[in-house]
Image 1 (spheres, rainbow, N blue to C red):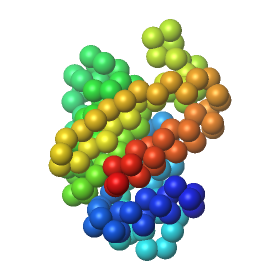
Image 2: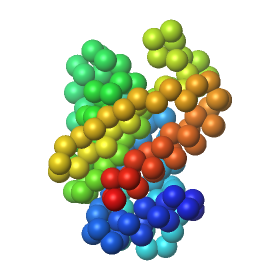
Image 3: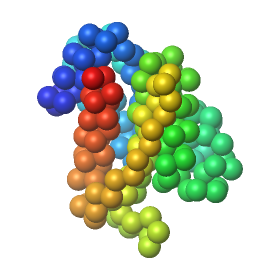
Image 4: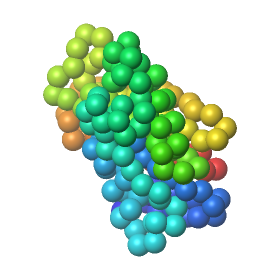
Length: 156
């Protein structure tokens, strides 16, 4: 378990928070980091690994029209994923990740581009980070760590 995850668990317990994740390109790495510690069920409701567009729609309620209009790797979809995870899990805070880990990408959505969402009862924020063509494993780890940092910062 990473130091970052340990800090999230401690802050989450102190705040009485319940967390959820909605992951695409990270494939469950955020949930795995959070659940590596015994007792993490105190603050981790669960995670959704929605790698396909169909799963984003079915499990999280992301409108297919939204994916068609913006693509799966977009802030609107990251927002809908985070909001869906929040609604489906009963958590108080949810983070989402959707991106292009590589190899590959396109002129408009290059390898290493990852969109994040962070949802709570107060609303949802999104951001896009271009990690660059670091290679699949490094992009996925960078996305995991950034999502964990978003959670940590949201917990105060």
